[in-house]
Image (spheres, chains in turn cyan, brown):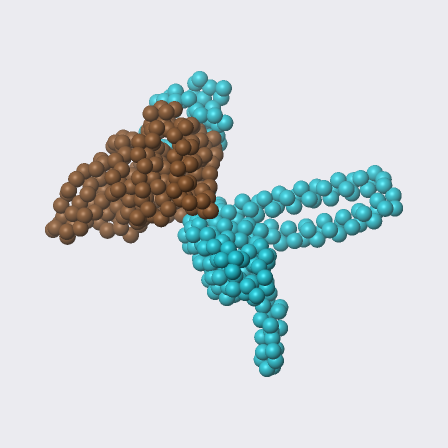
Amino acid sequence: MKYNLWCGEYDGKLKLSKDFAKSFAKAKNPSPVPEEAFEEAKEKVKNYYEVLRRVAIEVTERKVERELRREDRYVIMLVKALDELNEAINLLEEKYRDLVEVKTSEISEEFEERIRGLKELRRRIEREIDEVMGKIAPNLTEILGAKIAARLLERAGSMEKLAILPASTIQIIGAEKSLFKALTRIRKGKKAKIPKHGIIFQHPFIRSLPKRKRGKMARFMAGKLAIAAKLDYFSGELKEELAEEVRRKYEELARA
Amino acid sequence: MKNLQELEEVLPNTYFIQVNGKRLLATKSKYPPFYGERKYGEYREWIPTRSKLSAAIIKGLRPKIKEDTKILYLGAASGTTVSHLSDIVEEGVIYAVEYSAKPFVKFLELAKERRNIVPLLEDARKPENYSGIVEKVDFIYQDIAQRDQIDIFIKNAEFFLKKGGIGIIMVKARSIDSTLEPEKIFKNVEKELKRKFDLLSKIDIQSYHKDHVCFYLRWRG
């Protein structure tokens, strides 16, 4: 059995690696590493803990930087790509159906194969969005789910912008068209319907409520989302109380 | 310093002190304040509302930690509690795991300042990913508010905890199941933990941290 240690490989004997930073990043093993391996490492690496600590700091610093570097841009691009992909898949599926209605052939089989490939890509993009959102916006994701949270982020433009948006804007983000239509009507002195919710309407907590309660829920949720966005951007630590409060409010409204 | 009095040593470098008539928990430290705590002479105040371990110690927990204890710390966040543990295990080492990059920026400042902290930006759910870095340890501390926090704890103990080693886990009822009564959850958790650990003590810290209980355990290995 061979084990990967941060400072080298062990298979009964330790072979030190030339580049500790590299072997550190690959120090994975499916089962626990025997103690002798570490004992030998401590003999072979001079100032073991000092060196380990230095390598760990170096590697972690790079990792942190990579993770924080514009991961929000990445999600936004993924969301945009996902939309395009959805459109493409729908379009192609339609063409595919038209095609096989006339004749099945090698080409039509290949066509189907390609569409399946695109659907697989779509699944992978969705998973990636889930994963990155959980890291860069744990609080928003906890309240909204990764999909809707990512869409909110896409509309806002960046985590920084989202963090400084007021709750009232978050509430109607995605419903700009009807908002401005309403504002124009008001300016003209006419009656107008101001939208209660934009993107966040997609969330079951709002969608599943009767119409007259949706506004209340959207307002409450937007307030919590504004806090969540600030937490995500400035601290990054998860505070489950927020999602909890949103859930309780929903239960309260659903019951009443 | 005037009006400063050492009352009782509870752990290495850890004391109850009396300052201006107030009784505080503090660790003796060569380092400056880290998270907004006050420093009285060489004592760094250990704030129970900020650190669950501090709350547990004030509530009577006396974990078996020595100067050279090796610790695996899961859920290090920005390092509030780790900074005090680092004062305590002067000759030991703390392997500190945290999943999220943002709070770790601040944590890295601490890791650079201290000599006994090894920072690891890893997912504690996957101990295999840092199994070639962390050696066998005497003590695992976990403060991760996740639904599967008990599984995470046991999995890491299986990988890294010495037989007879000790563990502390801060269990947050609401993150395990927000619909059940906390008392019920704590009971279930206790049963689950007892399958693999001896329960040494169970400390209620709800007066400082809502819905939290601290379990102090010994690993049967």
